[in-house]
Length: 202
Image 1 (cartoon, rainbow, N blue to C red):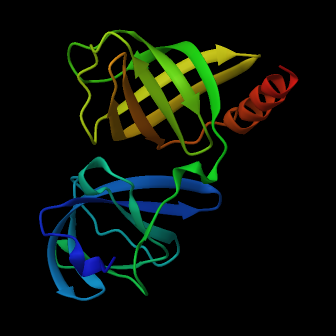
Image 2: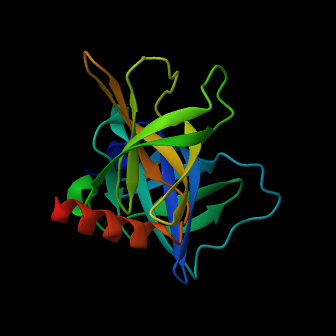
């Protein structure tokens, strides 16, 4: 997919990483200037201009909650109040199954600013890049782009994950909400390895 194929007004995200740490910045596409160049406006009140020269930056686009499309190692430069993003090539679909998912089916505490939400949810599965929630009562009022935090303890691990909703799957018996992890959790890798070993023994 060409970068210019993203319609003005569409939400996108910048994934910024450096020194084994990463963060996400949400933005809105303002206009297309060429096949591989767009102008974006960050969705934050920032008094000073950000410098992207010493970090690795990827751009992610979620078309209608479907499989996300990613442009790797884009160049970002300030332009008056906005930022110009330039890609060296086309975007490609991200394969969420590149990282192994383990089934959890465990209760977790929910933290969110979204009104009318329960305090506890059921974690369906988790990987190094995402997790999903099962809603059998069809009571969770989540929408694509919502951010939440979930936390639970299992096998001596303390998991505290922040996620951004990128997928909603409606089934007869439940609704499945898929989230991309937006923070760093030091226990996550060890926890997934432990759960894998446990499941192999069954």
